[in-house]
Image (tube, rainbow, N blue to C red; front, side, top):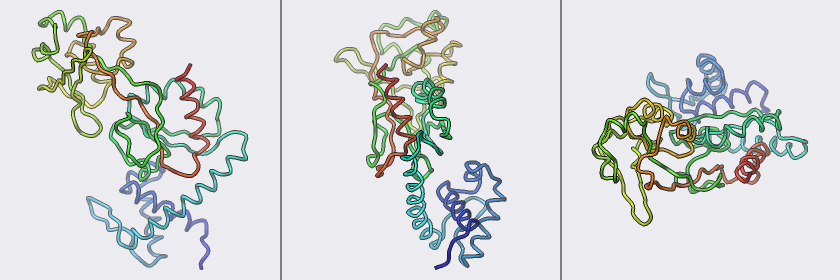
Length: 301
């Protein structure tokens, strides 16, 4: 059996990154390398192996049969290597290494942002990378250690831990907008208003769920405007563009300073809590365990 040298091991890692990322440009961005450097490394690997690993075209990069087989073996092998390195953390005083998270924008601001400064101070040897992305991704295939999503949107084969209680959703608008529009006495009156829809990471538009006691109303109407980012919808509401439906926590400041007010305050709904989720593996990375413990302690305080 041929022994791997440093160059070959490095090129195999690059091959795995290209395959899991789905292309040279995305892999290059994640690795902070140029696409041409990746392409050169891969050509060298293919020349040494004597087989073609990717089918390339102007529009796509796909694995050959040989590439598919090699990737499966490398994923198992690199998982063992990474597990071995992670095991060394048990002998360290503090966690170290790289930790990659994939989170939606709301969770980044409501769950992570309040804790990251303290995490950095406590664990300076951890290189934390957070990708804020509302689109749902396969965190294993994309090379993330963990993700955060709402409780109802987590793959069944993952371990999930709730980060706090369920969260309240409300409708809000600016006083200027409401002053120039028909009065709102019930959810049915929303049909006469400019409502701003949110397109979720799944591509679907989120229907407003309004509840009052045992009453429940689902709002799905022609939206005056549709956006795919909570912050933009809040800014639109502040400028008088219409009514939005969002997490109450995301507009705490606006409600306090009066730039937004709650619409139909007796109607709201409770949605699932955010959950941190990760692959079912034999040992949880120490850096991730430390972050999870910190997030849970902040939630209890």
